[in-house]
Image (tube, rainbow, N blue to C red; front, side, top):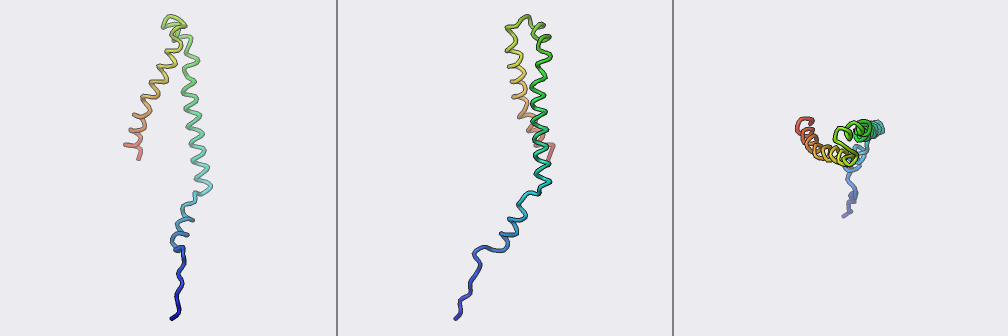
Length: 92
């Protein structure tokens, strides 16, 4: 009786691999969105700088300078998970 040979790789797998490759346009869109996000995060962290002399003057001296930056960073870090959860709940 003649033996039948089967393919080692099913044809479905090849089709799935072709569909899984990202399209060049979608890669560019995702990369651009990430770049804009990083720019906004950088600008957000730099916003304290111009207001620093006024804030330190209102607090009463240069010894409070580090506390202003620390408080802003802590507030940003504490609120990030909240905004992420809200985005997961309402953004999808």
